[in-house]
Amino acid sequence: MNYVTSKRKTDFLKGKSNIHLIIDIVNDYMISKKSSYRMAMKHPLLKLMPVYELTKNNTLFNRMFNTPFSKAVGLNCYIYDVQDPSHIRTLLIRYSDDFGFYVKIPTDAKTNPKVFREFWNLLESHYVLFVKRINSKAYPLFYGPVPIKEIMKSCKHYVSSSKGNTNRLQFDYNPAKLAYQVPESTSLFEGDLKDRINYLFK
Image (cartoon, rainbow, N blue to C red; front, side, top):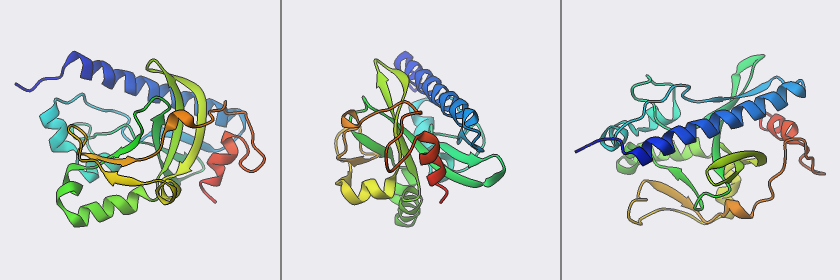
């Protein structure tokens, strides 16, 4: 029998809630700094799907591009310029209490080498914003955004073969060890969150 368990529903709703909270925090901060950059969800509307439907719709196109509500999958976000919406950078959200850092592999990328190469090339242009999370609750503490290309250079990564995780590109990277900061915090070389987001478009 295919159905959506109460746990999957709870996780799905909590995941969306955390993403919307992060988007609101980032956008309020960018507005306060008079920046024209904003954050948004790749798929503003998402359908809660049973496993068989999610597996069928977990394609490269449905995960990374604009697609109908009935087929859209993934909680990916993006940063864009309100003055020039063609300026876009894809942003993945990952959390401090995640079990390592991983990226979901589209189903068709696992079976089609051409699609896998396209997935890999797209992934190298993406960024990750790490967020502090405790007991499933996200907090306004961030690390990044970090280019996935740079993470790939410095961290071992592989397609997971463990049971239940065969659709993951797994990185030997522990988000719990990162130094999370409020958006206003600055560093000598990277500046505050606004500066780091602006740098994505340099």
